[in-house]
Length: 335
Image (cartoon, rainbow, N blue to C red; front, top):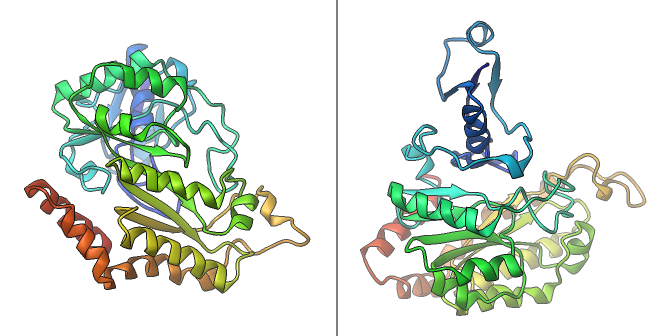
């Protein structure tokens, strides 16, 4: 079978509102699965028009197909062009070139109402298999690796990983607001943890089934105190929230950034799945609250506070830090 893979700006994104070229590691794992079965696989070849696809290929793939995660091999990062500059421009990497791995098929919580991976079958790879892939990425010349599982596996899995010899490469990951040994993560090689905070309002956290308390912000602070670069993800536009609720979240984000508890942050606009329970609480809500979309951009108003920049300057230790700060500023300005 001849298969054409056409990765795009949504291939590894979990939010359809954001177009971003992120190395599609999950898709690349599926492509390698077919290659190992002996199929003729092509990656990123753009035909002249769609009619060419029908004549030349048996199948064209633009998003993951859902092959059982536990049978997928490591991707071939040379074949799938992981060094392409378009995959190096996002803020998850401080040291370039960087690449992505995926230790699990999604998130061990798996209940958040807004998540496209809600209720998916959760599968975790063996620690030694993930560790082997990390070492392979280092051998290929990657300087930083980000685990793009929706949430890094924790508990015994993480303990086993951190008990292995330090890989000698910088790591990052997505992380829920949980109590883990952040100091051990930092010592092992983790630099960045991306944490989904979503809202400062407990009622909203309950309604979106986040499974966290407002007091869990303490784990963000603990991770920052351990020396990790914490990145917070917030969301605005919940249909049930008032203006004061939205401002409460905005002020929390600004406070964390100004105090250095968050090094960076992002904001998105709430777009729940149509089967979400939030649609049916007494009445059907609109899909989101358009009046609150302005708060997404207001997150970056933190740049007007001098203490935010004082903390940024304190973090500069070498020229790599200067280059990374410059890239962050460019990204924040949309340049």
